[in-house]
Image (cartoon, rainbow, N blue to C red):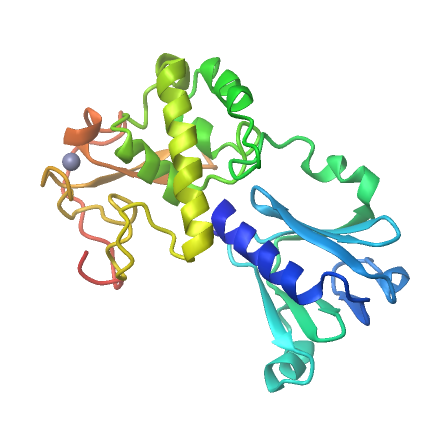
Length: 283
Ligand SMILES: [Zn+2]
């Protein structure tokens, strides 16, 4: 699932392609949404908040989208073959043409058209954006300090802090050597502050480089310390990386960790052998 760094890059790409230009086509293939009122209005800006995109258009309109698991925005040349094919693609949920570029939203998880002044009805429940400039670190730490849930689960809750998904949750807890199932309220304000400020820096770097990685390595298969590496040796201590679930029944998410570096197995982990994950190769 795309995380905050991917969404920020997507917003930047859409902004570069469309900002300042009038929209010549607003084709929203989502329920009864009708973008006709936006045609001829200029795109003011495209920004991300956590895992959501806000495309603000002159006249006080915002197109909001959420990629969820498989969504994607692409930018194509208006008259390119890919741009033309996108119109007929059954997975296309939105087509926004500027004067030079066509933005195509594929397999989107959510699509809304709201008055810009009403954006809070869509994103107001979310916690501070981990990529916020400035990041409201005190507020995020305050929210985590009182949270009885495992720290991994709290970090993944977009109402606490928005933008962190399973990649960054696993990686930052490894980097900080924190047990993912320790209650957030027992972690301590200083460590919580370190966790959030460090993951924000790593994600900012990922926005710049385009590589979702925490190790500083850009070679494919070497970007993570623990994420997707269960059954493989820890890059720090050599113990075997484990995977376990965090979150409530029905909403569980995978968390990877090193039992030696991070203080033991998950409460639900019986320690049985876990086979390395599939086809992505030897890591
Ligand atoms: Zn280790």
